[in-house]
Image (cartoon, rainbow, N blue to C red; front, side, top):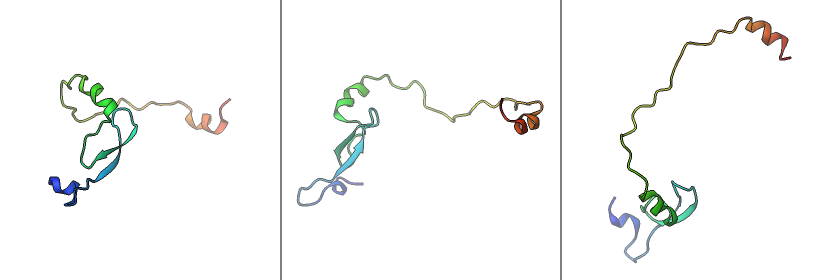
Length: 79
């Protein structure tokens, strides 16, 4: 996209309704602008940089639980 994609030749600027990716508040930004509201920009700038890039998320998978007499418990209901 070029800079012309966010405005027109009459000097009008496209505005977008956006939610802040830090606090979740709604605000209006210039087309293609930042992702944080003015209140949160300073807070986010002070956060430390990530030490490593996130990799593939793998959930721990253990052995399946074995329940004895499961059918009897299911048929009898919970006491």
